[in-house]
Length: 246
Image (cartoon, rainbow, N blue to C red; front, side):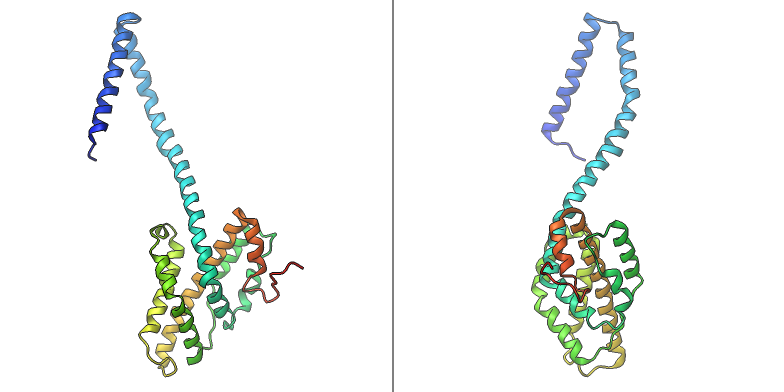
């Protein structure tokens, strides 16, 4: 690491100041043995200071900074859910023949705690959708993601998203599915193997979408209870959910 000029000058000044104070102490108050003993005591404390400052304090500060960054990133996730994620999740979940297997785990309530969210995530991580896919279904899905392509590109311009690996992976999965659609002229005339390939890509994005939605809901539960209440009342997995408070 190359030191800048002002850092070199500051280092020389502080070193000279320290030596001057030690010289004053030697001339006016104590002998050399006292100064050496004092330096030894300070050196003995130095490893403890390094431990406290680097391994504990720095980690606490880094954790605090990371949490603050994640709160800002979840604002981006919220915009994604509002602009695209919610619509895409509702579209896919209504056409998932296996949704009954996990639907009860996704009926989030205002009384949920961290343990409930953890259990829901475990169920989704082992889940795969079941799809009856035809050309019309694929065309509707293609049109949905194509309408939001510019929005996705703007999201990817945010360099801070690299700090949110799960959300970045979700965006890449949706981008990949979009590219697959873009390279196919006719989705109604497909070989079965090609249809299976598209279903696999769609299912990957679907699972990541649910997991990110759960993470976002947990974030709202912890930090923004008023937004969490609205999100619960617009749950795409709850057919009985109503935004109006009964």
